[in-house]
Length: 115
Image 1 (spheres, rainbow, N blue to C red):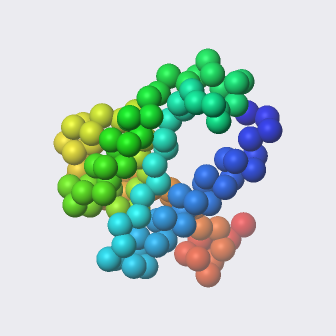
Image 2 (cartoon, rainbow, N blue to C red; image 1 turned 90 degrees about the vertical axis):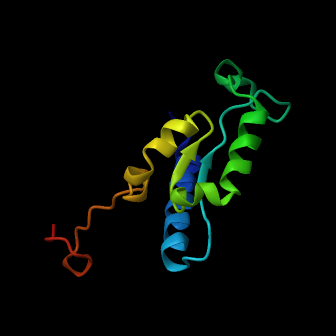
């Protein structure tokens, strides 16, 4: 979407940072949460048509992530619109990294084959 480059890039960088923190500091429980779009006084009116989420969804996911039950999501990305029961059923897949970014190394020093 035009005009979203700064927002999108910062979200991507923030998520990658959470992955690094989770890897480097195993005792930390870090997550990237997509909070949905809630129609509030702070929301830009141009997003109102997409504002189908409720603030309670964001709170419920935050509460879930605060519990040890969500440890399998450490360093991962999650959204308020995802079914938690289905996510728990796919716990082993998630623990293997399907909700993490995959960087394709290019430089030989990073394990790549060069440009």
